[in-house]
Image (cartoon, rainbow, N blue to C red; front, side, top):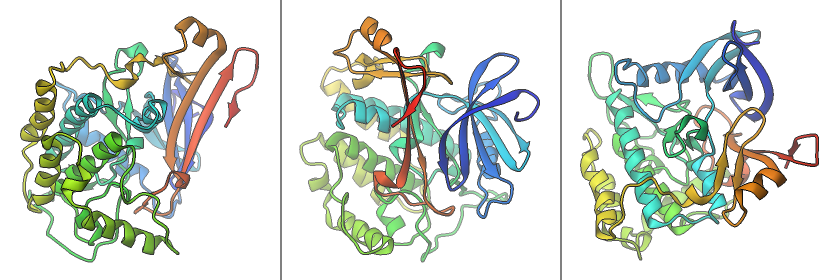
Length: 363
């Protein structure tokens, strides 16, 4: 049990912070996600993450869209426990299901939503510092939120405005915080992060979705420090034109804009969103929430099952042959400044239930 009203179910993930379990709210039977962190963790993050969620969700009159509901935070034996709304697959899961390539329209729809999310985060005086596809999840179909992209995992977030309303100072020689594949060039150079770095990291992720990979992936090195240096060097040496070749000029314009922002500058989020809307307008695409994965069968995600099935499989066949596939990715790296570059640095949890088998199997 966690608190007076939450039952802990099976473990679905683990990382340096602790464990993630499926759970239920006893009084409503609603499925939830429960993050457990040892009380004496070397680098505790859960209480800080809880505080950031409180800041993000504190507008009771008009609750923001795209952030998970927090049900509880407190002690559970030898663990700190954070109980969150259970969500659907991550963008990385959906990217894999779509053969590791998203269409331009889907990326524009993603960008429009995520620029709105990051604007809200920044309005709450927070910078995210952990952009990666695994930290953006779609909502659950049974709640009618399957077209909404949620932002999760604020363990590396930071307030960039102090209690006196003053912006944090510019500093250099900072340790790397975030995921090397997507982090900004300035972060690689050891410069303090601010709002501009969140925007640039999003740009790198958008290009990852469009291209299928980034030029600095898969670099060989003798150790992590050397690998991060090589990633940073490759980013600096890859021109924006080369990186965005074959895509509309607005993609290049967005990346240039984010990289040219001053450390203290407030980004023009509406301008950025309109760049992606312009692409849709030029192609006569409507903002209809028709993503590449919308034709996949994504059924309810619960403590027992979820489903992602290729569109060539009919719904009846899918329900008959596969009870469910639930996938999530959790960081398995070390320390609060976790920096995961390759997929093998993460824990992938797949729980599959097939009709003729009684047990769930991890693959």
